[in-house]
Image (cartoon, rainbow, N blue to C red):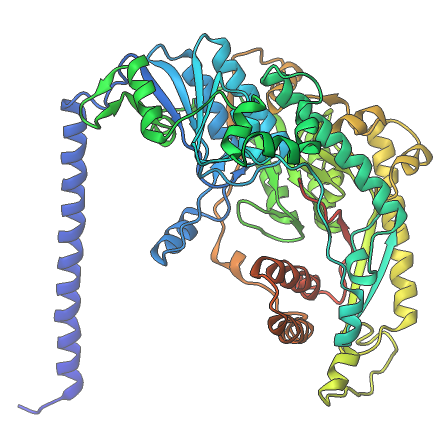
Length: 618
């Protein structure tokens, strides 16, 4: 017999494939068997364990409070596999748990454990606080405990019936506002020139890169905004704790004397100023809850159910008429974006999906965005406009921030509802163009060429900005601003001149925006759902359907446009910062600011027109 290598190789692959196929079938059958056994155990054991009477709900929030978790399940699993656990808690989940627990006869109380809770905006805190108040109104007690409370954690704790602090803990309430870094002199030293073109006197987005301090307009607007937010915070806390008006400010203004009177004991200071009701270690808290509840022998503590476990028991309705909720959270780009961020195309497609679903009778757009791409914003606004044209009501619910582009996408609604502490407005347009021609000269790099027209390579970040190109771009920005104010005027049923008077890139609180006709109602997310239900004539018999998508692998592809400028900025700045001995937090903030500057054109265009407020909740 003649030996033929290819024949034997073919047979080898055949046997290998048969073995792999057999293994695959065995594995799948084993998995199926395991699932069937688990299902049988669940059925014959009575299913999910029943919550027993006098159970305390543990509100142990993890990470920042968000409108929508970022990324996908796949991203989370990959992050966990790398040891990078990214955890956040969705507002919708907190509201659902608290409202259901308020009606659950097995839940007798709640314990707020906020040590692991991260950041949150004031409007979101107000939503959670209102849900805590509804829970208390059902006749149930809320106890808050913390090893320490920061300003945001304490806001929620203040709505509990009782607050206990660790004897070595503290309550840190310091106020709103922050110092902004300004990089004009530093960028000059690095050889980087930043050109800012804008429409709106208060559009201060680019000031950190072209000045060494705020403009008078920016300082005025920031003071007016933060003063109002601080007033909301102190009023809410003092009301919740039944403290006289001005208690918090008096405590801050007289901190030195109060600390001396407390013997330097910060925990005792919290007691003296009635910010907490007592000092207890965690085991003492456990003993208190044991006296009030029932001992669980299995866990050797009081009978309890953690937040995540209770959440897993909630089963929202999946059939019947619904209000579709589209979450627009994060900065606005033009294309496709994963959950936790906004893409003009992806968010518009979600709205279109809701519009074409016969079971969705109205849409609530929940906005938490400082803005971004003007074009991406318009794609979203247009889809909402089309939704209203086919007869489906649209209600906008503004969360922490709905400014600039975040306001743009809110301009095609039957009603716009914002919390009194929402940051909104910022109706203005800006473009930022960094150039590093002087920086590359320092390292001996030069650019030259023979483009056929002045417009070819008109914006090259390694060459000085062409003044003709800047003039063309400024004209485009002026046009976009006129379009912005014109659409706002049509939406608000007023004139462009009246909108222009309260626009100019200036930010407002939700209450200030209501007084200036930029929104319709000061209210909550729940108020937005009620409005949508009433407009769609649904009454109280409706379900809430969150319209979301799973990101594809192509969403992770990002443009490297501007990489040359980014590298020069980051390398130069790192060299300059590291030897100075700056604290890591300060250096990190500077690097973040300058990396953002280097990446502003990452969409792959020669420039980007932005409707962005560069604002965030304090």
